[in-house]
Amino acid sequence: MRVERFDYPLPAELIAQTPAPEREQARLLVVPPGAAAMQHRSIADLAEHVAEGTLIVVNDTKVLPARILGLKEGTGGKSEVFLVRKLGESVDDEGRATQRWRALARASKALRPGTRIVKDALVVEFEGKAHDGLFEVRLFTRDGSPLDEARRRAGQVPLPPYIKRELQADDEARYQTVFARVEGAVAAPTAGLHLTPALMKRLESRGCEIATCTLHVGLGTFQPVTVDDLDDHPMHSEYFEITRSLAASIARARQRGAPVLAVGTTVVRALESASDPEKPGHVRACAEETKILIQPGHAFAVVDRLLTNFHLPKSTLLALVCAFAGTERVLDVYAAAVKEKYRFFSYGDAMLLDRAGDAR
Image (cartoon, rainbow, N blue to C red; front, top):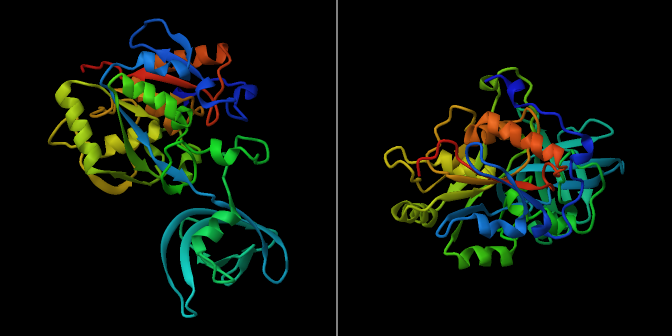
């Protein structure tokens, strides 16, 4: 499908630079199926718009403190390393615990094999470049201190590139969901940023079940679409895991006729990737990579409702939302959100959608 189909005008001032003062204070645009009128509410009202017994699936990935600002060993030149994906860990010939990562990096001069970047106790040693342009680096500590602790102390939360400000003290907490558990993402599953323990308790009091999957949001989530036809876009790969417990929860939801509500497009990607072709509406327990590209024409098998933020123009995430609720309907929703001055992207507001043509 032509990428230009997923475009819309967005005033720059509507791109949220900070989160709402409290998570539940973000606005919520409730979008019924068909042509029914939209409702302008807040996240605090979410439970009122979720049917009793709904299975709500959240992404429990945790954002890495992936951005490391350090100095070149020997020259003191300022350098930046952005950890993307952990490849493995071992003990080197000197008895040091080491980790190997894929990373982005920039410095005033070329980063050659053997170059070391130092931040406090952490050392990042460059080993070379991979075919995709990312660096392969080795991490260890100078003083033998625990490596994971040193890496987390040295790193910063990597805010998205459209947030044009310096990191603030509260970003470390606000750019994580309250249920973040499995470290591995370089960006937050942003729809989940709105949920609070109190809100989840209100949902559970309505008989809703809350379950988790894991999808580590990768660097590709910020990859621009540079082709004219979405079919030609080289979709990025992301690791996800569906547990036996989640697969059983979905099976129980199907048995009782309850909808599955995905909190965020990352959950949609995981659940649809794990769809069981032999049992429509169910998922396989699995741990694997997905490169699924969801655009209009995709036959949704698992997800019935979607809570999601407002996404970038001409993006694969907007194409996913259009596939879910209908392109015309979604673009009308976006136009209404712009008119009503909703806040867009990671720290912005959210909308609640039903699947188009839903038979369940």
